[in-house]
Amino acid sequence: MITATRSGGRMIWVATRALLLFTVVLGLGYTLLITAVGQLAFPQQANGSLISGGDGVVVGSSLIGQSFTDAAGRPLAGYFQPRPSAAGDGYDATSSSGSNLGPENPDLIDAVASRVTEVAAFNGVDESLVPADAVTSSGSGLDPHISPAYATIQIGRVAAARGLTTDEVTDLVAAHTSGPDLGHLGESVVNVPELNLALDELEG
Image (cartoon, rainbow, N blue to C red; front, top):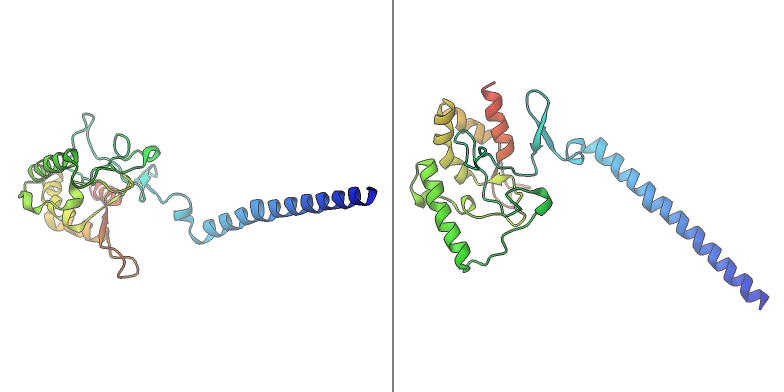
């Protein structure tokens, strides 16, 4: 009986030491190591890929989209507009989600048709030129990117609103367009928050 008790006590002590060891190594040591590697090798990404204006004030993240509207919720003509967002009231990082509506859902069909008309009118283009990402939200509702096609139909409107030439705005779009990952994964995209920040900086 005494031997069994001692054996059980040793097993508990061994298990306790193993628990403490792995807690320190994996719970603390590994976390500190990965944090250090992230801060040294990828400091921008590790800290949220934040972007700042010319005055140094953080205005957003290059990883999260945001709305560019006035106080009444109307899109601002001098900014490139992102794709619609189903996250909360729009680009709410605490409510990331898609609409979860199927392609044959009548509510989605009506919403898309209405958005096509609005986007075409706002940008002064034919409805046939409005791309899909201009009228549908992403799965997360937080995607900061739009397609080059959507950016292209906005160039004339943005240039006119800011008193810039279309060539100046086109060059900015090109500078903030990234190609497919690894050269072949996905499609080319335009980062809207970074592009709009560049527009503000261009005007001083």
